[in-house]
Image (cartoon, rainbow, N blue to C red):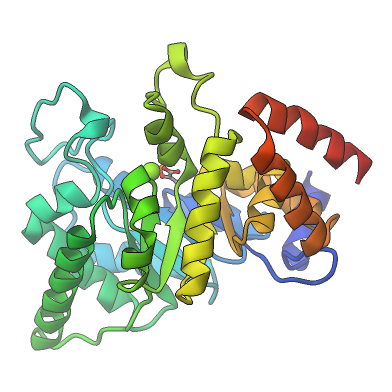
Length: 323
Ligand code: PEP
Ligand code: MG
């Protein structure tokens, strides 16, 4: 495994005919960022900042956040890092903020909804990201977007955070701004949303949960929540097509991106950045290198016609064996 990781680290993500696919890492803490580089990550596609917050008894200060974000970027040695603003709520409480008791937390005040309801906490994080982006290739994205207005509000707070940081005498960068597409409404608003952002990162974990109305943490319905299902792949197809029409680039940071078959199908659907748990990187790079873009597109088109996720996985496994 060590030798394979070293080989993957030296090799760029690409299809067999040389179409570049950025293979990036999902990261929760500094140690993950260091291991991401060892496994050959070409960037961080998702820094889940909530874990940096959840581990603490008090909200981390702006200065401490700047340090934490810079440290992750330093570990990536010049590779790009996408910082996702807090995605608390749902199954992820914050110890130092009073959270509403909710009957259905996954349908409640999580992600961007929580951040917009706590503008001071949110702007502190935004100032820290802007400051870290002054010296490092850092981009930012908002989680759990379900309406156009949420993105407008978040961007207005980002502008305010920029002004505040500059007034305080800090240098700020100009990060690309993206959103996670992980709710069905975001999929169907992709044309409007694309006018407000630089990129989409599709979160297949939540998108699957919300498309099937099947709690991702509930083992009794785990079988329903299958990201290989054509219902999910069709949502991704729509998102990627609309994004392409608007010149917005598309990545995927859900678990599907870290599966060799999933990665090939996603590339066939138009995705050009895949972010995953670091140990998955070598095998995903290897899988991508076995197919041309046209072959991946052909596979994806076939998968879209099947009836369920089981059929896609069975058929796909055969295609992977024969490739
Ligand atoms: C997702 O929902 O697919 C995702 C990548 O975000 P998280 O798993 O952190 O909710
Ligand atoms: Mg999510």
